[in-house]
Length: 443
Image (cartoon, rainbow, N blue to C red; front, side, top):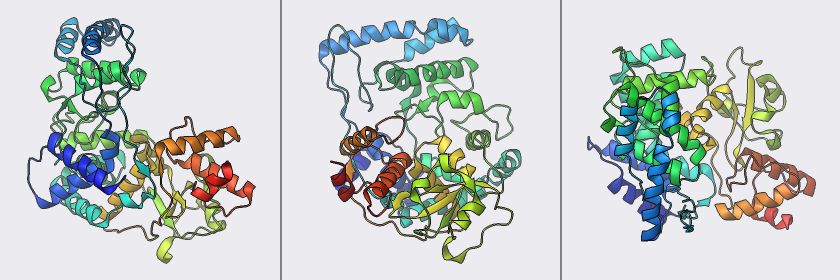
């Protein structure tokens, strides 16, 4: 992302999406920090559709909503609640990530995504921003100490990790996203790029309305339908809702303890292992084979140590960790920090599939607990647009490599490991990053 583009996006989001209800220098900085990480995701252009298409789409949308009734009824949603839900829902034409279907013979173009440039992950880890968030996090851990005590006893998830997710998602509730969740989910289910994903989420929020946990007007969300202080989708809320303040219900919209408890319950169900860090930073070493990154090559910590893994700053490995299954993580190949991650890394990743999200939450949690920045610096790397990286991935698939479930233009661990394997084959230096010299050899 270019700096000037990022500034415009952040400024626009600050103006139109975020309401700061406690003006405070650190709070404002925290919001700007969180927005800078998500600006690209919400930066698509609004749909450009004709008046006739809009009219026909609104009519088809009404039919789509009515078609949900049999599924809603099976979920225990009453006709009264269903009708009230449908009545309040409206198409949200200005949210990003839409791909409208063909209606009445007219097929508009999908909303265009800004061509962000992807490069070194280092730009996401501003010391100043992370330290500000950590300061606010420590303050909130003190404020909600009793709730965090109960959550840790019940789930085994450390308070710093739960607080870090809270900080990453909504800047510790200083940011409030005012979209109507039902309308957003309905729009994504009808006009979005992933209708099969959002259809059950729309039904799930109707089920939440049926339970009457909060007034329907309180069901606010992001443009992607995530709700509450820690931003959970409706389906996950129904599965993991927890009472954190002892009032007998789980209100993740108005009760911070409930939101924190629900997030911790999710992490526990995702395999969180008490007593282990999310990951241990290790010194860069040519002895570590970067093509072994990721969940498929998990092995006991002792094996990584035998392969040359040493913790940074001469830190000692924890006792009784040798047999713990662990994984190599090198998010910038050999151009940045390396980690030996535990299952807790992947528990956080279940909350958000981005490796950068996990690294950010993990490092913020460490800073809240008194730690600091990663010891190894992020080095400059070649940058690419997503479209350009899709072309690279297509070529690699043609050579027989696995770059992930889809050709998505993101430099994930499978693209990195495939790059490293082909670098070996070509006799190049193996750094597991698809830089320009490597791409030139693909042609």
